[in-house]
Amino acid sequence: LTRPGRFDRHISVPPPDMRGRKEILEFYLGDKPVADDVNAETLARGTPGFSGADLFNLVNVAAIQAAIHDADKINTAMMEYAKDRIMMGCERKSAVLSEENRKLTAYHEGGHALVAIHTKGALPVHKATIVPRGNALGMVMQLPDKDDTSISMKQMLAKLDVCMGGRVAEEIIFGPEQVTSGATSDLKQATNIARYMVTKCGMSELVGPMFIELGKGGPNGGSGVSPETERNIDLEVTRLLKEAYVRVTSLLKDKEAELHKLAAALLDKETLNGQEIKEALSGIGKLIDTSSSSESPTGGTADVLLGDEVSGETKGGDAELVTEPALVSSRDAEVR
Image 1 (spheres, helix red, strand yellow):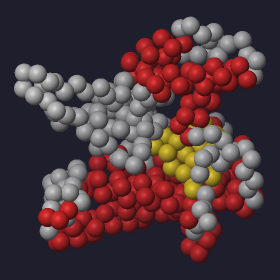
Image 2 (cartoon, helix red, strand yellow):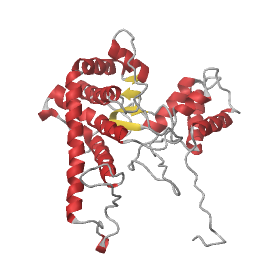
Image 3 (cartoon, rainbow, N blue to C red):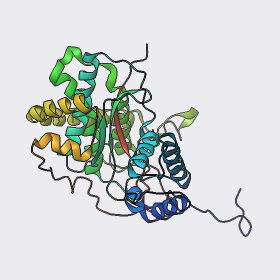
Image 4 (cartoon, rainbow, N blue to C red):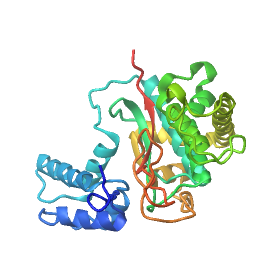
């Protein structure tokens, strides 16, 4: 409805960057009793992609948690609880899982976490849990250590590998015939990423540097591309997924001892943060260096939570807004 000289301005309001999130958190925490261990900057770094409303909700959930526990002040543990609840959903404390199911979930999530730790370009692991949340029996959450304005091919390939980690771990430990339907959302996420790489980012030599919007632009609602191009897209998507599967299979077979360690730690504690995962793998508290795992060629100021879309675009320039605050890999509960 824009008109020259009248309504002729487009105003873009992206999610706040790290500095913006810090200032918003400081504002919402300003009128509440807060413990000394709560650091707004640390919280801002751990909430990429959160909008102002999300941050308000974060503080509100933490305040409710403080009231439930009759605490005088909001502490870091309560803020972490609120963040996990918003990002991963509520715990299903009433869910009763068999020991066999818990073990399978532990290896599934351990596979995701292990691949993320040992794959260059993958986001750092924030938390792994086998506690059911929402429709998931367990999940691994990754958070970027900085805001980025774009995402490289290396990082996208790393995302594909992490998505495959759970399925491959099940196959290695329990055998091909025991692979479950728990990797459904992982495979969907991986397929979306691979198709995005091929059709939107030009990251395929066979298809070429093209932007293709399937389902739009053609006659009678067609794709707007030739049948040969559509076939090439399917071939390239399949190739990317199969290559990721092969890479992850090789990695997890090589790191099988670590996979057993991590699964045992998850079965014991049910939820592990990034530091605890590193300590469980090292055995003696020696840390694994993942400082370069989320490297980006551009730096920038925007990275947010992963939904159905892998990324969005900004108007009026070449910078891409990565709409993926956190990457969540999960084992799904089967719907019967």
